[in-house]
Image (cartoon, rainbow, N blue to C red):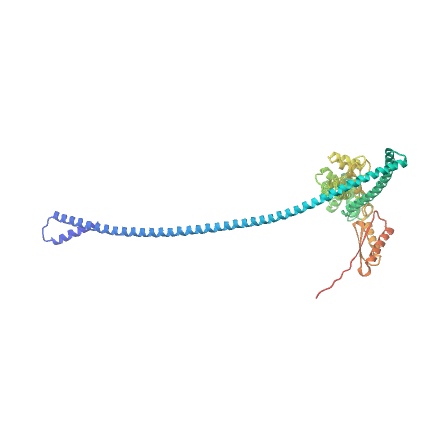
Length: 539
């Protein structure tokens, strides 16, 4: 492009200069072409020179940078090598130091062990010398003993010969007579020793048995006896009694027929009595009648509906009560039918004592006795809980509750110990396992403890108050507490009005007064406590 522009300029120059001359056109073109070629060559040489100069400078710059980078990397490599050398040196020094320390420690232990071995060697040498001396003295004593034995045998033989001469008996006859005499003396002495040991063992057994019973009973501080389940229902007024009877007595007939009980409605204000020999049906009827009175809608259809609902609720309550009793004594794996029968015992009483609570008491006391004796505690609790299970079915089956209970337990796969405990806890059969005896003992403890039977709540509280009142009559007594259902009295004395010497006399006088003025089963432990306190305040 540059050559064309240059040729165009030359043509214009020639055209201007030869404006007045006649120059041939080819010559002009040749001249222009020559000039163009010359100019092109000159320009190419100029740019080639410039390019070569620039390339040389770039090459020098690249070489210089390469040299600098090589020098930098060389210095970095040298620094890294020096750093590696320093780290290796430090590591080797640390390892060398550790090895030197280990060697020093091993050397110290070796020296210590060497010293110990030397000491032990010295001790062994001393012991060897002592043993040698002892053996020498022992050999001398053995020799002396042998010599003395020989002399003794000689003297005995001489004495024997002398005795034979005086008694006129030979050796066999004398030996036989001597053995007979020794046999009689030994027999008499053996009898005295046996009698002495029997008396001592009996006393120890009585003490241990008494301690076991006391510990077992005190570990279970049961509540007083619950009052018998009553069959009375409160009514708001006489008009409600009329509604219960209904027109021509249809309501009361429907209720009695559906619930299986008798309603006793008399002139007693505000009370309707429910009578039935079966405590379950009596309690079901009482609950149903209470719901009817609360609801107010009393007619045959409603009566049947409420009674049916009460029966279902009662069944659930029985099962829940049985499960609670089983959980209370920490037993598991009991047949559901047996659990239900335990719940039914909640509504049975014996001598005003709730049978289910009595069974729970027997189970806990029996478990405590078994634990004190080293027997199976869970098995003892199981035997105690199920020993009166027959009372839940004695209205429906013939026979004693012990026989009925044993048959039930056998039917539901209980162990022989549990069956035997239910069958023999009243000594009806021969006792052949210890758990039956434990259940009998626990049964007697539960029935005989103060507050267990034949006492209502009022009589129980009155008797506890009487015990405390007797103890408070003595001078110096500050506070009195009757605990463990009346089996123990805690008496706190006033320190200003009593001394340690008078405390013993007060304790003995209280125990004597209780024995003379109160009738109680078993025994009452009286504990007198006297304490002096001094209090000062720092200000």
